[in-house]
Image (cartoon, one colour):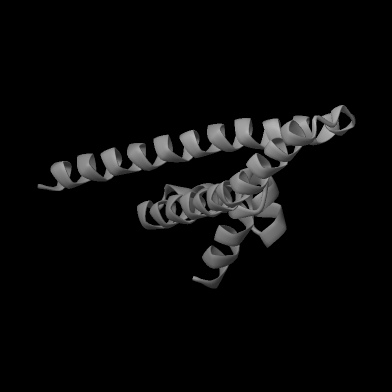
Length: 121
C-alpha cells in the first residue's frame, strides 16, 4: 500500500503518468496497473477533484481584491496602471473559467456516481 500512496502523490504532482512513475520509482506498467484498480482510480479522482476545488477557492478569494483594484483604477483615472487592469481582468476572466470548469467537473462526477449506483442496483 505504501507504493500506491507514493504513486498517488506522484500522479497528483506530475504532468504525465510516465513522469509520476519515475518520480516514485515504479514502472509505467505498474502505474497503469494501479490506475486500472477501481478503488485506486476512484481515490485518485477524488483527490484530483479536491486539488481543483482548493485552487478554485483560492482564485475566488482573489476576486474581491481584483475588483477593488479595478475600482481603484477607474476612480483615480490613472492610465499608467494599465498592467494592473490587465492583471485584474485576467484574474477575473480565468477565475471565472476555472470556476465554471470545476462546476462542470463536479456535475459530471455526480452524474457518474448516480450512474454507478444505478448499475449496482
